Length: 290
Image 1: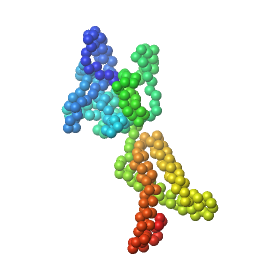
Image 2: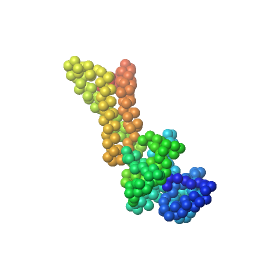
Image 3: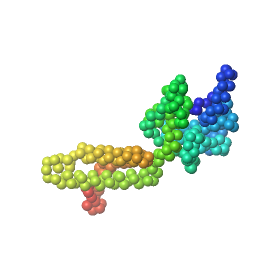
Image 4: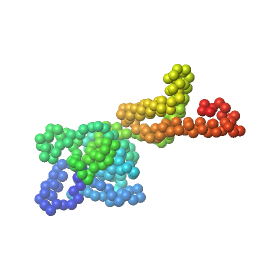
């Protein structure tokens, strides 16, 4: 239940019915941890009827500090140095005991896929009881409102973020991301390959004595077109890796150096030409860009 009943209602009879329903339901309720200090939370916001028999889990989202884009979730946190289960962890394990994740200390990437979750209005529960039977059911708000979160799919309700997070745990398919060192090495390798094939392609074409060979060999537009096609191929490969293996390779670190390869080559060519007119010219006698 993704609803926090912070205060009692003025209708005592309704409160009594709510408490009775909660006691019989065995449902998992959300809470929010607050006041993060020195590596632990020191406060929490709970429903008024919480007792030792009520199952709870925190719903604090892990977002990007610059864009507030919710990409990750956590399974465990601490409240006054006491371990606390997240709502995602608690609910996934209640539904399927085999879904328990061993490493609960790290953050997990939400596997946002184009999934369509069944949505049933509060007035249509009885008519759709067969659809809900033996299923994991989340209760909360699906309409646009204050509980909207920015995600890679755009703004979606918090309840849907929780659904994607739980699905990630149940399927054990969180998005893994390449580490910084490997990403740097991959960027260098791709840049080297880019420079190498561009040079040999342009040399092969410019070596042709036909009109089109000379034209294309001396055309910067053709060189940029080749680079554009190459970038498209790299992007397609990383997309396939993401879709098939749930592995994320950030493209910015790769594409930016590749885009700047041409500018770097022009700068190098200018430096070579400048030095060949000085006493250091012998160093660059065999340069490709002299």
